[in-house]
Amino acid sequence: MATNYEMGVRWFKMILGVLVFSILLSQYSCVYGEAPQVPCFFIFGDSLVDSGNNNYLPTLAKVNYLPYGVDFPIGATGRFCNGRTSVDILAELLGFKKPIPPFATTWGLVILRGLNYASGASGIRAESGTEMGVNVNLEQQLRNHHVTVLRIASILRHKALALKYLNKCFYFMGIGNNDYINNYFQTQYFNTSRIYTLEQYASVLIEQYSQQIMTLYRYGARKVALVGVAPIGNATEPFNEKLRALVDKLNADLEDAQFIYVNSSSVSRPADFKVPNISCCAVNELGLCNPFEPVCQNRSDYALWDSFHPTEAANIASAGRAYSSQDPSDTYPMDISHLVQLSL
Ligand SMILES: *[C@@H]1O[C@H](CO)[C@@H](O)[C@H](O)[C@H]1NC(C)=O
Ligand SMILES: *[C@@H]1O[C@H](CO)[C@@H](O)[C@H](O)[C@H]1NC(C)=O
Ligand SMILES: *[C@@H]1O[C@H](CO)[C@@H](O)[C@H](O)[C@H]1NC(C)=O
Ligand SMILES: *[C@@H]1O[C@H](CO)[C@@H](O)[C@H](O)[C@H]1NC(C)=O
Ligand SMILES: CC(=O)N[C@H]1CO[C@H](CO)[C@@H](O)[C@@H]1O
Image (cartoon, rainbow, N blue to C red; front, side, top):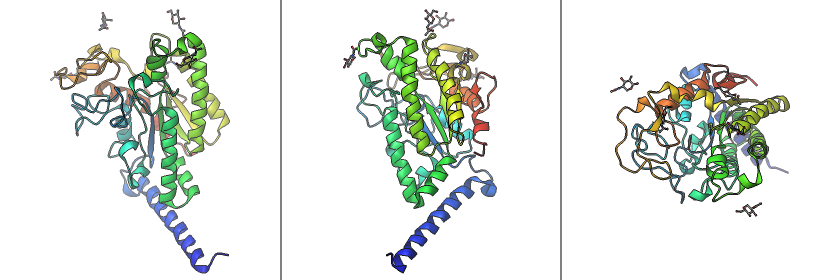
């Protein structure tokens, strides 16, 4: 039997949890005017959206040196870009005052605003990108998110409240590029291309990905954008077609959630730039910028920063289209601005 004192403590914790929760909700409602459209934003993905998670890992896939960050307010952070990545731009469009911080170096109450788990060279498959060293693959990114879910439950002192809170967040998942460029097409390190045709490989990837997405759903995600893979000839089109079909299936199966597909080849339009296919920096054999070498003068004329990663200017354009689509092929079945407004 619980004593009156224990009961009292329990009630106190409960009320404290509800209070913290109400304050958090009111912060993003109209009370404070310019609050973000969602209370929190969680990011899963690869180098396109990594914000510094690889900095302390033994890997060649890290860029915490200039000229990376040359146009970022605090310089080199580990972002694979001269400036802001597409998720930095999205955070701004959603009304966040600061970028979503990396999981690797973030503690405390700030995790309530969301975290970035993305890791350069990572993929859906655990082995993808490992020829460059250690990365945080999607499976591990989800384990890291589970740690966050438990931390949030402990901050709010109530598991159900934490889940209710996590239901309101926006989730961004952009992964799969390295399952091609740092796996299937690295035939000296990996044998996937000898085992699977491109069509079969796309099915195998989507099967594993759909289970990982279900894990995210079980951790409370209800508004999720799934970003397709960048075009490599037409090799990745089967993956993207299946990902779009998966969005339909998830939306049919999970009535309390909404998933959207963001078409990378539609939202990124290098042809709109004066210099569409030459990188702005001088690159090494891995296609990453050489440390401390000069870069192109007018970065907003270039679509490509290094061999693989877009410039900030290109990220502004593509994130803008993912948020507010300009063409029916950009997003499916709705864009991010509509997704975050849904009351599910
Ligand atoms: C593929 O490679 C892995 C590890 O490199 C090896 O364990 C496996 O036997 C190989 N599979 C085939 C079919 O060659
Ligand atoms: C993505 O958009 C392009 C047009 O930009 C289109 O050709 C392609 O079919 C789209 N892919 C999917 C999976 O919707
Ligand atoms: C860039 O595109 C132009 C026109 O399509 C082409 O002639 C040129 O070879 C390309 N350059 C590189 C580096 O791919
Ligand atoms: C840089 O490029 C942009 C876009 O093409 C152009 O508007 C701007 O005038 C250029 N700035 C300089 C200094 O050349
Ligand atoms: C996966 C896929 O559809 N690949 C095709 C890409 O296009 C070339 C020719 O343009 C075909 O040979 C591939 O089968």
